[in-house]
Image (tube, rainbow, N blue to C red; front, side, top):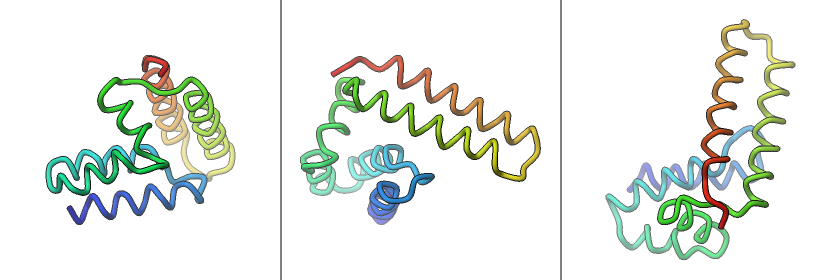
Length: 113
């Protein structure tokens, strides 16, 4: 339950910090809450900002089309900015690009809700 709360907090921070992802932390929170606290899981699923998106992803494997495009735009903007500006080796750059391609494929496969 504590890890779920920490994950939720990191997800909320991700709303305000561009390189910290919100969605994976919220999904991790749901995963952890469903195993540790039914009350916190219900609270998260019924949350006025996050609940519908988390519920749709978990139950229907879907995302609104608008959210998909927004997610992919932020993903690629963040990855390309990181690849262009960070002083890391080419292997790290390649790994970042491969992660972006994998996440893009996953998001595109989700049904539109």
